[in-house]
Length: 172
Figure 1 (cartoon, one colour):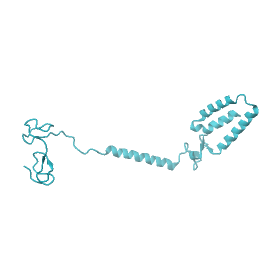
Figure 2: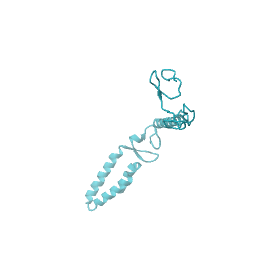
Figure 3: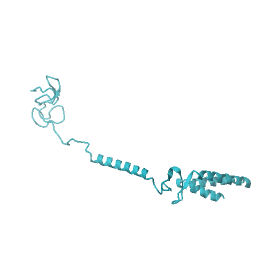
Figure 4: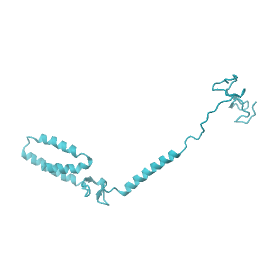
């Protein structure tokens, strides 16, 4: 009797991978039942069967895979569990969402983020016309490479610029 109840109980929750845990728990409980009276064992088995039957009312058995599932995992249109007959609207929504993510990734991969050119530019000295290096003064003639101010608006402009970019004043 207990064996049948355990088998049915583990079938009931087998889908969720807890059947073995229940069997181990019942084995421990059976060890604790040692030394109990036959009347107590009979009462326990009857109570266990009643509890199992009460629990079965909240589960449906799939005719295809024979698993017991709750109502949330039951496809009423097809009278099968959602593992055997997934709900169309749920699957379509999931497929659309996956496709949307794939398209977003594809679009992002084809999008150019950096629009500049990668060139190596050298600053030419306004005095001698040779590459000046990266310091504040030309490496060849020692001329200052710092920015000057526009006499009209005070905007900083590089040496050698003919007109101010802010106000258009002609520079020397």
